[in-house]
Amino acid sequence: MTSTIESTNFIHQIIDEHMATGRFGGRVHTRFPPEPNGYLHIGHAKSIWINYGTAELYGGKFNLRFDDTNPTKEEQEYIDSIIYDVKWLGADWEDRLFFASDYFQQLYEWAVQLIEAGKAYVDDLSPEEIREYRGTLTEPGKNSPYRDRSIEENLDLFQRMKDGEFPDGSRVLRAKIDMASPNVNLRDPIMYRILHAEHPRTGDAWCIYPMYDWAHGQSDSIEGITHSICTLEFENNRPLYDWFIEQLGIYAPQQIEFARLNLTYTLMSKRKLLRLVREGAVSGWDDPRMPTISGLRRRGYTPEAIRTFCDRIGVSKANSVVDIAMLEHAIREDLNQRAQRVMAVLKPLKVVIENYPEDQVEEMDAVNNPEDASMGTRKVPFSRVLYIEQDDFMEDPPKKFFRLTPGREVRLRYAYFITCTDVVKDADGNIVELRCTYDPATRGGDAPDGRKPKATLHWVSASHALDAEVRLYDHLFAAPDPEDAPEGQDFTANLNPNSLEVLPSARIEPFVEGAAPGSRYQFERQGYFCVDPDSTANRLVFNRTVGLRDTWAKIQRKQ
Ligand code: ATP
Ligand code: MG
Image (cartoon, rainbow, N blue to C red; front, side, top):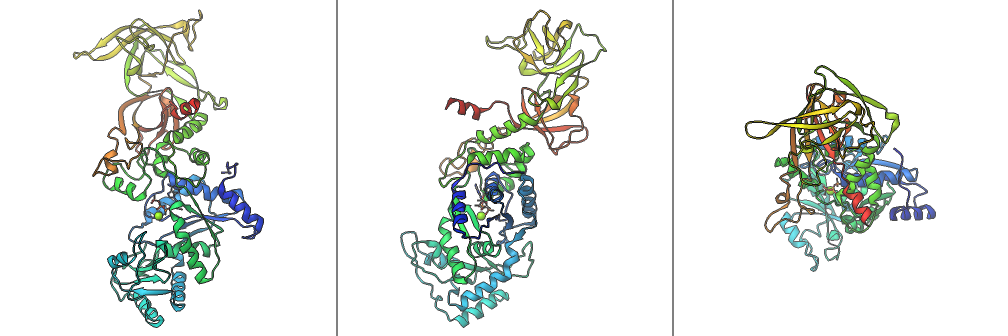
């Protein structure tokens, strides 16, 4: 996929300056550095596009690197899903797939180098004591009593930590920087902790693991990354990353921070999304209501729409919240251009055309996509017994209801005008069937006398239509800010109880027969839908990707 980034953002301005001064010898090399502790979400897509799009724009390179430094939270399932998702989004790392765990040996040797230089020490304080000694934002920390151990003792203890002599949590290796630094990150940060844990890639080769802060910057350095693009919360870590690089005397990338993506009605923390999965609030990481890439894919989103959205929201230094209607607008726009139109009745009401011959079937011509004539037309079977939408009929309608009602004529799309002559009810008074007549002179949807009904309805032929299940979605959270929960409660209190509505008895024109999971359609008048992997050979399941009403476009018009 080629870049659609045209306007220059502040990151590009920084790079332009580096280009002008020759700081990186004209190179641009970025990376996306996920931690494999969950599935990727739409916020990660923004980071991927900034990194990949920037490399693309400057003819540079892009790496995919897993920052896999925490074996207790990381799993192969997450690694696999992330690789799949980044590829699906269209970012290409060529042959540059890396893991921080590939650098464990090098990181270890660098740690020894710092100990030898008197810049790192083994600390025996407990985790609680370390926290206590760290001080606060307003108070300086104080030195650990173990801070001034001899280099020899530190080398010996660190070796023994590596050899597995000590239990988890009993000792750590710390950088010796400044316990009084106003930047808390510089108060002798932990470089290694003891963790007797199996790592997805290195197995039990290690029982000490580097902290993210000790691994991240050096990994960028090893890979020759020029611009380490990350989110704003790492701004205060930058001096630490620079300190490590400087002490080691190795190649120094430039870190650049940008504001992370926040979306209304959406949570974007892997930790919290994991809770929703574990607690069964959703069916899994790929539940179509999840903001994960796998959820969006299952919902029917395209990589192109996600990229368009990321381009439109832009890159900035200021935190803000994007209206989710903007994301929905992007997919609606994309699918409008490419989706095959079909007719589907979600809540069927039987209609019998009394003056239509019993065994007659006609093939009506229907347009596949009015936005794209090259998609052609198809035949839709019409017969005496049809289904229309329950909502398209009212026996006793209010004034502004223009659809079908007793005695009124409406148009059936691509077919005929019909008039309702009678309403059939069951013993409880529920409407179960409509009796209608049709005007044979209106075939194709036009009357020779030029009369025009006020409404055009979609329909399917009862004996030809396929059974299907349709799943309609609303926002997963009922509050624009899911974190804004009542006193004493958390984000789960804001889960929307009506985020999923299952319609078990939808009927769809036969055109969609055999559609593979992932196939996308516009159901006329209902929105865009995508075939779900839960579909079986006999019964399709559809997810509504997005409705037709464009709230974002409306907001834009008002402005
Ligand atoms: P989360 O808090 O959701 O778990 P994270 O930052 O811990 O996210 P990482 O796997 O460490 O997740 O993130 C990989 C990259 O994606 C990082 O560079 C991070 O800054 C970026 N990223 C994460 N969330 C967002 C977001 N909402 N918007 C933009 N970039 C993001
Ligand atoms: Mg993280």
